[in-house]
Length: 482
Ligand code: NBP
Image (tube, rainbow, N blue to C red):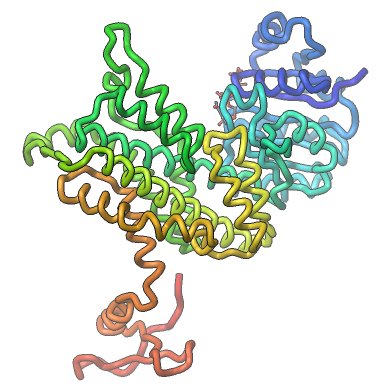
């Protein structure tokens, strides 16, 4: 009997996805560039299963049922192109290549188009959930050639995570690189969620002087509220984890954050599309700032160590912090969905936002109870332009406002950096202000560069230039927006 699907790449993600597929009754053919890893896998974790090995791409192709489905779980970038180039001459028209790595979506756009010309279908799929997700149920976000989806759907939906109602956290996202785009936004939101939690931790630790056991208890309690999520849950575990000397391990970890680029891509994409994705972008910058460790140490000596003490009833502050975290999180998701909406419109992807929320509901790093509410919001209004306008989220934003402002103001007063919580509040203030000072900005642009402006008392699209000093000419610059 031939294999149902081939998987190339036997590192942590590939191996675990294969074992997951095998558990669900699919016969998988496994291949890896370094052939010894095929043997190690077959004689190790795959021993006693139906998984078979292939030591060359030809052998892999020969062992698969038509139309062949071959999933790449390798390092993103050139490695994917190199495997595609080697596979294409061995495949038949109608065969399917799937890239399950963390690929930047323009690469997927390019690959879908190039392979279409050769009659090969291509799916670019985000896979989230790390090692455990891959093994027992990841969130899977596939997009690309729609003709390929019916062949891949049963396997992907079988191995994916399920919601509490047993719905698969996997559905077709859209054409071209839509799947990888949605995975990129997922990762951006993950950056935001993580940053928000770290800001709450610093406020509790430095501002309120709380012990790690106290902070652990707070996160355990928060996990029973609307903040219920995987990241809040693991944070409580981390805060409670003691090193061999009995001290909290977290304080022995160097405070420089790593990043592999997906948060940065999200921010760059937002700038390209003109979407104010402030919270996620601040989260990326916060990681950049953290990596300037030597400079920060020198600067603290130069400026003096801040006292950062927050006075007042600790329990009241903790509740204020919880509300500030929840409200900021709503803004982060609202901005992420704004970005997806713009990309969907620009690319004609017709994204289903409720489905996206459902795909993130289980299996992935940002999984949370909150995503069910997001799904409900898009079920009520599929074209919702700002998540915060949905009545459930609007209610939380309004109820949290005073606590959120208190936390933001206090952080500024005592010098605890909270870039994401404060920028989220600033965003909401801007978004809910009908008249911003951009009129003055337009006047400045017209003053120094004759860039023209529109008037509130004239129809939109009519442009004016003023000779502000009486010295300049009446010639205006061309009007366009980049
Ligand atoms: P890695 O990203 O570490 O990639 C390892 C695989 O890539 C191995 O099969 C390796 O073959 C192959 N490879 C490399 Br590296 N360079 C190669 C080359 N020049 N030619 C051929 N093969 C090459 O594995 P991973 O952590 O399992 O991740 C797989 C994909 O899934 C990545 O795109 C990753 O970003 C994404 N992802 C990872 C996670 C996670 O939690 N790790 C989560 C979600 C998505 P070799 O054995 O011969 O070196």
